Image (cartoon, rainbow, N blue to C red):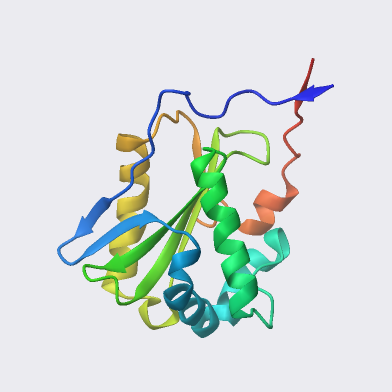
Length: 172
């Protein structure tokens, strides 16, 4: 029989609204966000594929609204179960999705979480992206019960991450 160790303390509550800067915040995402998520992903699809494609096979070339709803519903279920977390970066009125941040249990040895993020194509190289790059590790250190987070795409490349040994589940 295979079991996994608890990833996060059972009594810990994940943040549900995170102030980012004046006019922007992060919050968990779900299927109701499809009309903001889909344009953000489509506008950045080619770059996102170079980041997440080899590891996750995402985003597919033809990401449909229905498939995105299913994907976001899956993320929402994982958030509810504290298995994995997807946060969107929104403007105050939530009229646009500017990027996403993932906090996942480790899939590879050497960390207690794998964390990554992206911004929409129009923000690549911008001050907003630089602020998110600085904010994410600070927020994780302050708000999450993690001791060895790994920032994939920052601390190491995705290719280096893929080359790490897989984390072996404990057997009981």
